[in-house]
Image (cartoon, rainbow, N blue to C red):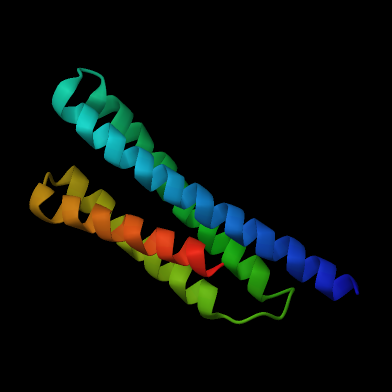
Length: 120
């Protein structure tokens, strides 16, 4: 009984972490639009990038916590780790000002995050 409660709690934490990550990526798309129209767009996008990266790290933590104590599948850990790699590449591309790859990768990341959320 205690194992089921722990697994259920970790599962919901994992779902919340994925939802937070998805939301932050969506907000990054909005702030990217503000880059073109508002003077504060660059600042907002830079802050949002840090928050999105933190949300990706939280996703990894939630996946590990759902896997280890609950005895679940390690698959979410692999997905979360892969997503953290994508987020790292996205940050590097943004700093290097490579929009031809940065923008499509952002769209891909949003789609993958929505897919991960739908699977939970």
